[in-house]
Amino acid sequence: MALVTGTTAADFVQLTTAQANDTIDLGAGFDILALPSAATNVQVSSVEAIQGGSAADTVTIIDASMASIAGAQYDLAGGNDTLIFNGTGFDLTSATLANVEI
Image (cartoon, rainbow, N blue to C red):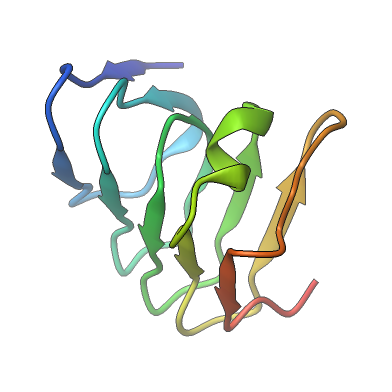
């Protein structure tokens, strides 16, 4: 299991290979995580936008504060994708969800 940590600025992280149970915390700023074309399973914190790949992805959001940010965008794209919100306190009224099958 790997841990990817961002900076205090806005980060863009492009994963190029499949990930299995990795944790990604991109820190402060409006951060974007782009998933690879291979099936990926990640836990994310402080990631305000997710761009999915073409395979079946599983993304678990483990930080309730990131889902309440105005303009949060989670688009898991192709494949049979799963988006899990782990915990309580998620406010999705201003979030955009797309291409999430489960």
